[in-house]
View 1 (cartoon, helix red, strand yellow):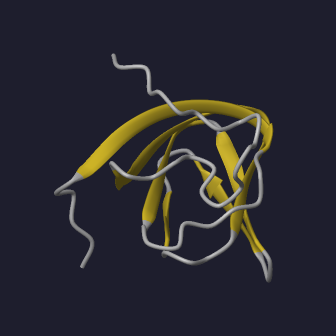
View 2 (cartoon, helix red, strand yellow):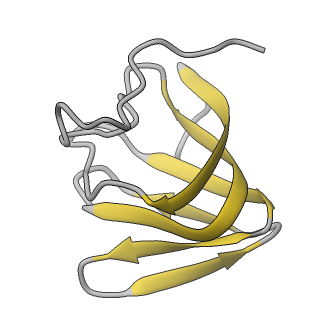
Length: 99
């Protein structure tokens, strides 16, 4: 059972296709706050609409993709780098903005 202990709750906006990546040691959970996006996996794509969520287990390669700007709440361990093993990506956020 996933736990929120030691996790961050991140509010993010994105548009377009993210980088294909995985997190070897961390699970992630995404909740769509506004609009919709596709969570692409190598073997399938899951369409997520407003109010829906998806759990991505550690080690599973994935790539979020949104046609327009989407607002998402992400629950993940504090140690997670947003681009996982896609080191050197221009989408990597090394320092989080706090609200």
